[in-house]
Image (tube, rainbow, N blue to C red):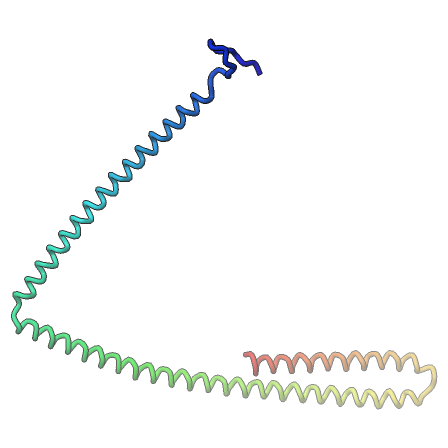
Length: 194
């Protein structure tokens, strides 16, 4: 970096960054002062308007107070009677609404109970059918087992066929067990979760 010598012989870069920094700082200070003045003027205007608004509100309240004071006792009594009638009407309406809500709640409860009873009956029917199907399937498995025992008494050449039949029986029993399991699961879901 080449540095030029000033007239006094000092070694400083040209242009001098100190001068630029001071100019920037002075410009920012001026900006902050202008901003602060603007904020003060804004606050002054807001406060002036606020005080004027409060004054107007006070004048309105005072005028209203004087107006109410000017009314005679008869007007106050009329207002009290009207308010009392309004309260009585509101209480009567609330009582009527409460009665209607009670009736609606009773009807909803009865409907829910009826629907629950119907659902329980349907689930009972489904459960009965599932049990009878499983009972029939188990009976078939028993008869098949009896046939297999009879075949076992037969010749040695039937061993291969018996093994195939046994595999079929075991597969059948597995299918029946799976059906029974899914039927019981479906019934329990409906009864407990549905």
